[in-house]
Length: 104
Ligand SMILES: [Zn+2]
Image 1 (cartoon, rainbow, N blue to C red):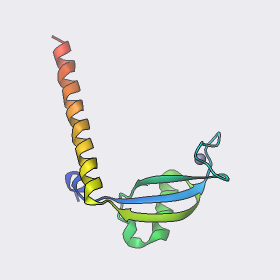
Image 2 (cartoon, helix red, strand yellow; image 1 turned 90 degrees about the horizontal axis):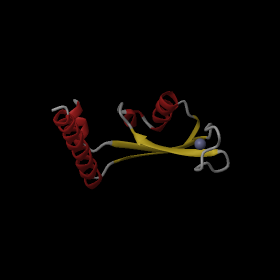
Image 3 (cartoon, rainbow, N blue to C red; image 1 turned 180 degrees about the horizontal axis):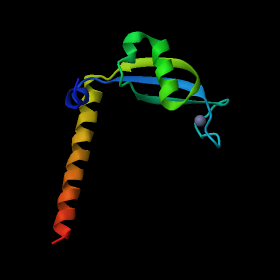
């Protein structure tokens, strides 16, 4: 899957809790645990929740991962994300253009 296809597909997401190693403890921590929500980029969902937990431990150096939940974006969420991405790209393009204009 190339970058465009990945962007346009319904992305897989993961949410889990882990031992809070934030220093100082983060505001979201409850009984020394906090959570993370992120995208799955390596197709780990196909290998099961344990593989997902291992991938997260590797990527984020999170320990004691539990309560792993995996789901796929709905079309609505995907469309919102794509729209936000396009806006960000347009802003960036404008920024470059304005930057060049300023050099005149
Ligand atoms: Zn924390």
